[in-house]
Image 1 (cartoon, chains in turn red, brown):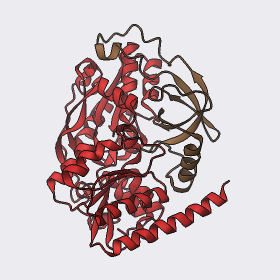
Image 2 (tube, one colour; image 1 turned 135 degrees about the horizontal axis):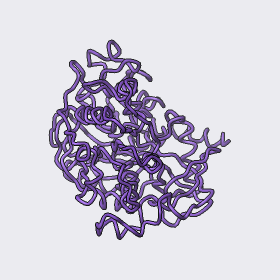
Image 3 (tube, chains in turn blue, cyan; image 1 turned 180 degrees about the horizontal axis):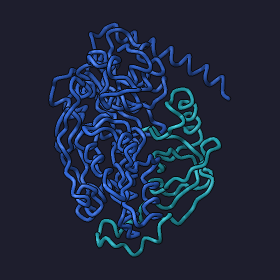
Length: 364
Length: 102
């Protein structure tokens, strides 16, 4: 409908790509981490990755919620799914992740009730409509998604619903970025910061990382021009020897974020240690239910414990989500592990790095 | 999973789909002081498909306003220009349009 706009954008894209090439000429080999899984897919799908000079490498970070969810979590979900009179309500990507007793999809084939929902509100509605059954919402995701869970729990509490539960594995992005930097195993020269997580937490949330680790942090949207602009900003900062926060998604993200959304999170959750698949426990990176909402905790209600985080033999998803290896360095990639018959979560999730490489090409 | 999609509010439903949240059973000061959970709701038009979304995070929005919706919740208000730009970028770049939450 706006072909002139499209044309202009194409010209803009070329201009920014040229600028990136010019700035990169004077820089050594660089690694920029895209934290968000939606960025991983968009960068590959739109060809942005292939527009970058050889010395500018984008590496994927731990920003695909399905990929970072521990196997112990999935096993707990499967255990609960196997109970009578229980329906598991989940975002679609979770149903195919293999656990130690199979995926939720396989449990469904064996008779478990597993329902894919668009929103936790749908899970709560199902619980209201079926008061004699128990409903468990798989509460995974980062700050973008957590307010939805929080608001739904407030609603459930206010209206006295007792057959609605959450299996909670919400995670926080900033502590994970800090943990990666503190670990120091992966050289990171700058961060392409997630667009929609930043809608909630605000661009100012990255100031600490920019300051403490001297890493440029630039928030980006998901279209080619926005992502390229953000990469260009990161390179300009590096070239100038500076590290601060910039926002290339200004039309949606504000410095302070969505205070209502963050307020919902704080009402219902408090920070705690979270287990990240193959990474292990990161203090302060998870969100636990506050005492007054513990009665919604599916683990407590069903008397189930979160099992250990065991990775499938040979699977390198844990290293992929930390940017330590690329998918093609995993011996299972595109051989025994494919989107149709996935072994690791990074191949299952539509936003997993392995799935994106498999689908859109393998250039790093 | 953090994808959010812009849509236009075409109707506001003031009551949430719960009963009035005045009789909070939690006894929790944090929750009882809240205006509730998910309400008010809006009907949001995504280029023809209409979905109910919670407006709990975007107070003050009204019919005709653009919002960015994720997992059944509006997470940000957009002005017309922002919405148009976001629409175009999503049309060009976004993934799996049949699965807008992923």
